[in-house]
Length: 213
Image 1 (cartoon, rainbow, N blue to C red):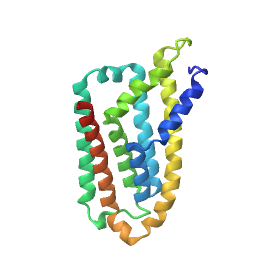
Image 2 (image 1 turned 120 degrees about the horizontal axis):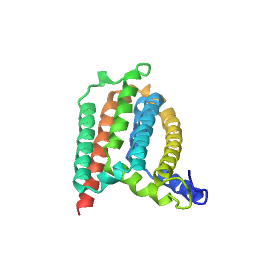
Image 3 (image 1 turned 135 degrees about the vertical axis):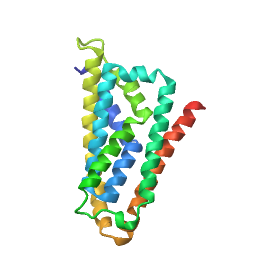
């Protein structure tokens, strides 16, 4: 359900997009560095889950309807920023004793999975990306409907994104494993993640200011 004539251009564009640092990459890399590869893997799966949901919405046309309502996008952006600020505050106010042990991170992995899902779903730019990007590669030459083609394109994008993020987790998580054994780093690791969440919230709010300017 993908036009082979546009597939090389689509793959090249996706690779280029994956290499551009963004909030998803920041969250996955920082969680891998701070808490290890298992938590980074959960964040990657959370990001992939939200990507699949956005793909389905785009294929059904629901996200296009939302995108046409500027107020809905602004509300979504504010909710997303508020959620990230809360996550940052929770991390900053936690004590060093709250830092998870290396062998006791199952609960944290589930938490980062949920956070990755919601932080991406509540990011209007992610919604707009699927609405505006996928239709560019829908071909009228195929018998498949535009929705079917967008679904196939979106799933391919999510598979490539997941593979890229898993590679990122392995690379960054390997470095993070040695840091997790450092007592000084463990004392401040929750605060480090708190700053990351604050940065992501500012990222969202800054994009809102730019869109209003």
